[in-house]
Amino acid sequence: MRLSILASALAVATQVHAKGPFLKTIGPEEHIIGNDIWNVTIGKQYGTKLFYKNRDIVGNAVGHYASYNGAASDLSWTTVSIHKQTKDYLDISFEAAEGELHWVIQPELAGAYQYFVNRALPILGEFRTLWRLDNTTFFNGHTSIKDEALPTSADIAAATKVQDETWVKEDGTYITKYDWQALLRDQEYYGVYGPGFGSWYINAGKDEYNGDHLKQELMVHRETATGDVVQLNMLHGTHFMASASDAFPVGKVWGPWLWYLNDGSLNDASHKAKKEISTYPYPWFDNDAYQSRGSVSGKLILSDGRPASNAAVFLGDNHPNETTLDMGRYYYYTAYTDKAGNFQFKNVRTASYAFQAWSNGGAIGDVSTTFIKNDVVVTKKKGTNLGHLTWKTQDRRNIFQIGDFDRTSLGFAYGGAPHQHALVVNCPANLTYTVGTSKTSDWCFGQSAKGNWTVKFNVPKLPNDSSAVLSVSLAGYSSGVSSTIVVNGATTVGNLTSANILTDPCMYRSGTLAGEWHYYEFPVENGALKRGWNTLDFQVTRETLWHGFMWDAVALDYA
Ligand SMILES: *[C@@H]1O[C@H](CO)[C@@H](O)[C@H](O)[C@H]1NC(C)=O
Ligand SMILES: *[C@@H]1O[C@H](CO)[C@@H](O)[C@H](O)[C@H]1NC(C)=O
Ligand SMILES: *[C@@H]1O[C@H](CO)[C@@H](O)[C@H](O)[C@H]1NC(C)=O
Ligand SMILES: *[C@@H]1O[C@H](CO)[C@@H](O)[C@H](O)[C@H]1NC(C)=O
Ligand SMILES: *[C@@H]1O[C@H](CO)[C@@H](O)[C@H](O)[C@H]1NC(C)=O
Ligand SMILES: *[C@@H]1O[C@H](CO)[C@@H](O)[C@H](O)[C@H]1NC(C)=O
Ligand SMILES: *[C@@H]1O[C@H](CO)[C@@H](O)[C@H](O)[C@H]1NC(C)=O
Image (cartoon, helix red, strand yellow):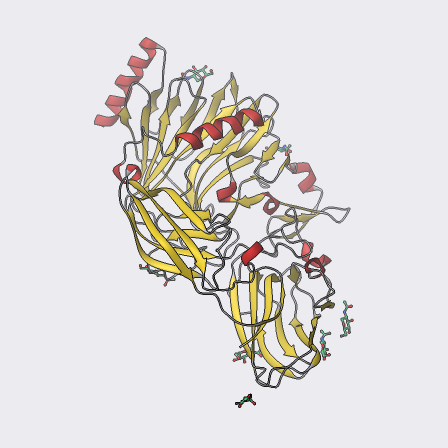
């Protein structure tokens, strides 16, 4: 009650001055917020009537909301209040039982900064804010890797549904929202636009997102049930993961990120994003934990003396019990080492972390091990120098390797190709790869169909102990496909069996780069290999259309 009186008093004040950011309460569950450039009417859950340049750019669409676990729970605002007012901005808090969504509105900015403070979110996989916008204003989507018209409702209506959010057209091509996925941490800006209008998300920080360098999310799409143009802000997401449920500490903050409106210019959005990134972390954000940051640096050397060039480095959960991709309760930092193995993380929140490193291919693409150092302490305004770190490699004599260890399918046919449904159907059922003459790109990014993929390799001199280790690294896996691994048609060294491997949707949701990484080592007993030509088969014994193994690398080494 007290808060809404305050709000109305401010509204009166705003009308008098007719300038600047405002909160205007027009009913117990209806508020208008904005500034002279834009405004939106926010009800119990949804923000509608988004006026910008004299047009309602939500129109018949659902508008703005926050939700978790798919569409299962849309947050309901119980209290709306002014959290803070300065000469530069008005910070308005929409409180729900689960937490507070803030809109930080400046007088001259088209759009607003937003942030969410956790109070009681349940353990969840998916948590997001989003705009569902007018489809006569916005027609195109834009991400770091895709810029084109969204499929229309008419296109979708004329096609035949083949699986979750996926349709086949008469010409045999597919329409699916999953084509609009991208690596979250690669985004400078993304959003939707049309003639004269653009709506963008610019998240300069990204440390609040779950996952690592390879965390992918759905960014924009056409809502098929309603025709709305959707601009997603996946704060915690699972669209391309096996399992990623997290419990969040009370007070965890996502953001501030910028929701930005313009005339549809990509150049302007890009320029704005660069400016935001250069001023991150935002000095105006009044939150001690957010402002309390230090840095971490060091140099990684492989145990064989090579510099750990261009390695993926990560600061995440201390003494972790989850993979780097699956982490998500706290804050995460990603970087790459330089050629000499030097790394630096800037603007790291003060806390204790585990530092991890793994090969990102290239000069160290033969390294299958992961480096980890726990108890890395980050202190406010201090640099934590980890010095020279020695990363133990697997240190084995290699017989052959196909593909770089980098947790992705890059290098193989279709590896990292533009996202497209059912690409794995183009990979052969039977394939022969001859070490020494075949190229990496002769191996396909995914194996799905019943058949045999055979590696032929020559062993001119067999050691008297020919015990070996077969390393199989998968960039991802979608269940329903099983294989048996056989050496020289006689020795079964292992299997990759559905139900024993955590499944993720990468293969059947247009993934071409990665899903969840899986790494296996299978011992090859002494005597299984012979002098001269040998074979290694991946025999697929069970198939499921569009599912299967996404390869990262295969290596055979003497034990
Ligand atoms: C919101 O914007 C529209 C269009 O510019 C304008 O007519 C309306 O008065 C604005 N609402 C408020 C509360 O300022
Ligand atoms: C926009 O949505 C309407 C339904 O509200 C639908 O009939 C129309 O086809 C959609 N437009 C596009 C371009 O998809
Ligand atoms: C990891 O540990 C946390 C407690 O720190 C626990 O809540 C969580 O369930 C654990 N996750 C797994 C996958 O075991
Ligand atoms: C794979 O090769 C083995 C051995 O040659 C053969 O028995 C099996 O039928 C083949 N599998 C398929 C699916 O072709
Ligand atoms: C794969 O090879 C097997 C023989 O090993 C053969 O029976 C099968 O027809 C082949 N599959 C395709 C799709 O060519
Ligand atoms: C390999 O040769 C060495 C001597 O050169 C011998 O000690 C060892 O037992 C041999 N190992 C096997 C598996 O035959
Ligand atoms: C796969 O390998 C495991 C471990 O060796 C074994 O227990 C299991 O029976 C094998 N499964 C199949 C289907 O061969």
